[in-house]
Structure formats: C-alpha cells, structure tokens
Image (cartoon, one colour):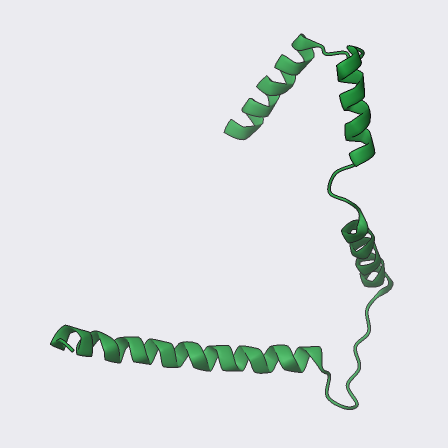
Length: 101
C-alpha cells in the first residue's frame, strides 16, 4: 500500500466504524419499534386507522384504468374523440406558467 492509502484508510475506517455503529443502533431501534416489549401496547386514533384503510384501498387500485384507456382508443380510432386545440393550448400555457412560478 502507498502511504496515501494508509492515511486515508484510518479516516475511512473511522467513518465506517461510525456508520456501522449508527446502522446497528438504527437496527435496534427499528426492531424495537416493530416488536413491542412485553406489556407495551400501541393504539391508533380513529383517524389513523382510517388513513391506514384508505392507503390499503389505494394500493389495491391499478395505476391505470385499462378499460378507460381502451374506450378512448376506440373513440379516437372511430374519429369520435373531440379535440379542442384552443383548450389544449390554454392548458399547456397554464402548465408552463405553473412550472415557472
């Protein structure tokens, strides 16, 4: 090893040691949070329970409504999907303004 690496190595080792200590303490905290000690209890408010239920419902929904996409594609193919160029342009301008603010 070169002398430069030995100098950097002590600094790097110290940093790694601190990181591993932090990681170990974080693991201990997260394990303690996931497994309450005997006698400890956790309770959530009604709002907290509702938020958890809503999150589960949202997670169960698909990212894209495939039926709606298919219906729009059919309408475009048939030529029945109305496009308003002025409205599209206005919305693009409004989006651009919002992004620059």
